[in-house]
Length: 375
Image (tube, rainbow, N blue to C red):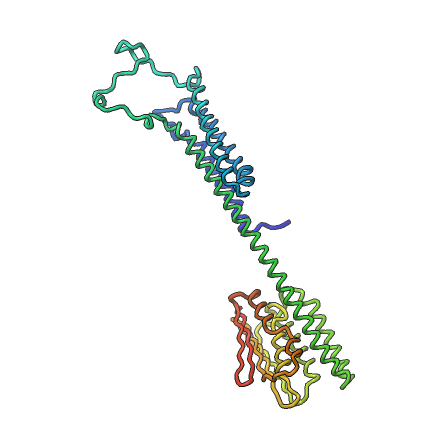
């Protein structure tokens, strides 16, 4: 069972609570006209409840039929005409209800029987009061009862609410799908970048072992054993999204020891690390491309050279540095054999956005690279 995200829960609450509030307001509208001095005529109450039921049907028609099949399919003109038609139907229904219920003997509003004061019969209107005799009669708009305007404005409210809720719901769903798609693309790209690291790593180590088999078979056997331990880490542990800092340091140490087997005494490799919490989690294989790059460009068999690798960890950050002299290669295939540091930069941008720095600097043939991860 898939758990709902906070955004989905928020969307469901809006869709549940807001329509309930709207319907409570609509169906309780007649109560505003009830009081100790005045009670709403029964025919108006009944007519109002019937119109409110039609508005309820309009809401769900708009939500489940008109919006999904017309508005969200970009048939805006047809959708607009459908809404106009629905409003016209409700206004016509209101007119018919008013016409048939008004004169109903039990439900209708009976006209008061005023005394005959001007020879016009018992139902004649009473004379106008003295203070109102000089004023002109009200225009037709002011003679329209409030309940005659209600169906039109209530229809607009119902359509506005239902359209707004469905638009918000669609926007939230689209955002959810976009986030999920971005996560899937991120996972795919990270997996691709990781697959680039693994073959490159095995290529370098097997190349070193092939050299050792000719120079020192016993040392080559030791290197193969060391490589098997590293392969176990690469094949199984790095399938996880995170590994411990201690595991990553052990892997780097094994790799450096393996690389040392083919180096001469003129090549000095320093690996130092200081950490406060070896169980700290981080993405696997973040630092190995920097170490590979240092051995690839910082080793010479003609002159003394030094490679320095440092890792420090405190409560605020993990800092990894490599420093080596750069020896230019004459073989162009050698320069193209590695995946480069662009892989590292891309993985950092994906895994630690706004939480890292990545710096490279070359001064006087000394090449320095630093990764800083903020905890």
